[in-house]
Length: 212
Image (tube, rainbow, N blue to C red; front, side):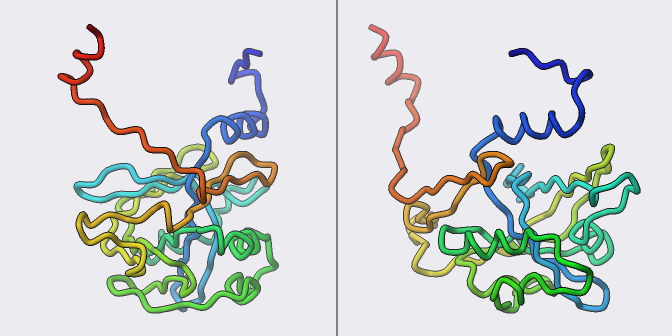
């Protein structure tokens, strides 16, 4: 089927994009308001964008409804300029899902999910203690586009548990970390445990030899 974007409602576009741009890494973002109240929310509109300087991007839609009200994460980052991306691994999948629940105002997502916090080294916002890796970020820019915001965060600190680091690189032992990915909007995810395949890059000279 061919879909013409101008003829589709926003919900249909969303359904198609998140089913095709997959698997997507999941950022379980911790942020704080000016009073120090914590918020935790998962986002799969997320990726790293560059490494020099290191920048990650989050796509954060407004709260449902037509009032252009930003979600707590976007509001907190805009006002305090800091956030932490906690890497979602297989053992944190259920807790991550709980943090995505639309709890009433005043309820603590971390408490509801049974998660604890630990101090970050470079920002005031704590990381999630149970997360095996986290990126400490400061806001570089927020771009408002329609009913969404693209938040660019400059990574100022990286935390990874020692067991998941190969010091030779240093490299992340991704085949042992077991991050999960988001597949669509129907509750579908993918595991990486037991699913790795290695495809080395081909040097040009080696590629030419293969064409003979």
